[in-house]
Length: 182
Image 1: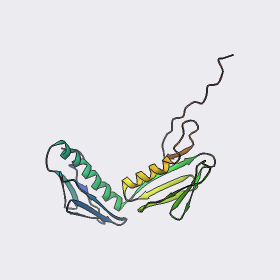
Image 2: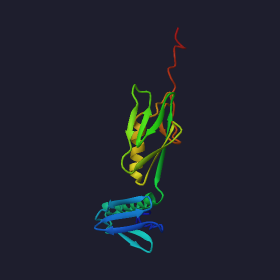
Image 3: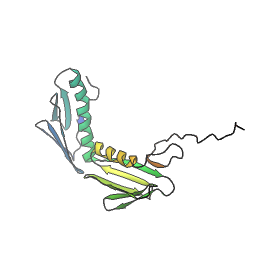
Image 4: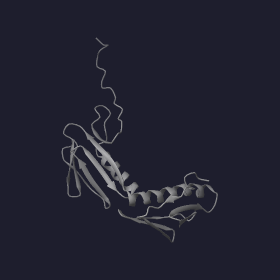
């Protein structure tokens, strides 16, 4: 039995979960999410908890068991608390500012880079070098943060670029020079 799949997902008092036609709908104070469920698992709501049971013991049944439980748990947490990823910009002249729902980034290119926030995602800035990506869908928050990071990933020689908060970039040595040759 899946160690993750057998655990019940407790539902907070301000969240409602409905299961109908193999679609799980979760509604809370921050918004509403829905996820379709594979036919190899059954999702039930009982006693203020969501339980996921698999219908067989084959490999697809076992793998869908833990996945479905984790997706439901992420939806419940997202609509009640929300998710947040933080990015840091490092480099001389690199900065970010916000214009409406757009994020304008100066990243050392000949032009400013503009990034439009998708539906359900919001940006907050701390100064000009810290970006917070916030939303209720864990997958979407991570995807948007990865897309922003990919605009200028940290380079290994000086460490300039966009990185996740707390990410450690291993730096390389530069050229060794002509110390040994004459």
